[in-house]
Length: 454
View 1 (cartoon, rainbow, N blue to C red):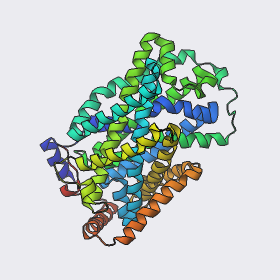
View 2 (spheres, rainbow, N blue to C red):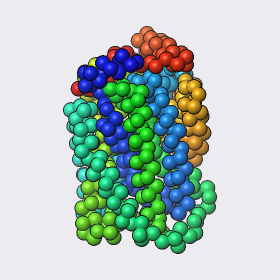
View 3 (cartoon, rainbow, N blue to C red):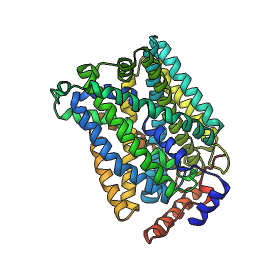
View 4 (cartoon, rainbow, N blue to C red):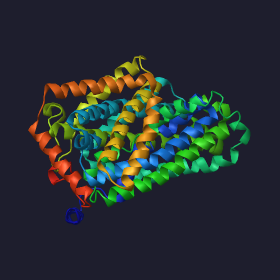
């Protein structure tokens, strides 16, 4: 492992800690900061702060588990790759289909959140909001087609501005927090905390996206771990601070205000706050969409490599090539999602909840994989993460039918096409890596397993 890392560093290839942290920050700290405080407050009132706090605490073992798995088994297949090692290719197929289904749903929802925020800031109509949202999608697809390094450079430039804007909004709003706005604390009952948690999971489901980028780190073990720690610290401070000031300043209006960050900034800075909120919406949306498209495209290409999806549809992972065919497949899926949204058949809230259910299923499978493959304290983190995510998944209720149906179709597809030699060989090789890790060796996938960006 050390030799591989050394060679990667000398070549100057792969993601470093700052760029990697920015990619993770884009996946976790996305447009959820724009709309989710309102959705959570509407579901549970001030008690939604408990949902925020619980999910932030749960994020620690979840993030640690995925960092450990990604560092030990770096591969563009991410959670699906780990599931194949631990539970076999049929479970891995279900995970892959869940994540691929969640990407077009999630990025479309994220783009629309940003579009609605920008429209609200500029005083424009819903049609303008949709146009802006889809424009952000097109720009992100274009940037990802250029390459992961180009995406990383753009996000490095915007990340500092994004974090600064949120930090300023929280800081200047703290003086307006009033204790009476937290009473009654649970107007909809304590069960509403669980309901709010299912909505908020949309904001915390980005940690599994990091595993798809693990093979792109110059040092998958130390680099991914350090990037995860840095991202986690920023997310805890910014999300919890934003939730507190939203409830404490806006009170009952927090559950009805479609643009709480805009309101906070306008109260603090007047007309200048409108420009700041618009900038925050663009940066938060663009970062999240970029990170998920990068992860989803690499997963699709990895599935094409292993013949779990047709190569003519998604291409395959090869060194020194961007997964553009997989990106084109995701673009087509986003178009199919956009049609019922534009037609008013599907709402933004429904998109968010459906995406959360799919990503919760992916995350739970990933943490259970950690229970199976990791040892010592890392395994303890995986056990705690599995418990937390399992509780959230239960509160998804009827939406659990969606990952259940998609998973069943994926498994049936595997039964119809058993025994792919290439996939089986990689799974067997990965099992050997798992055994090596259990006796204390540092291991990594070979160069052929990674989707290296130029």
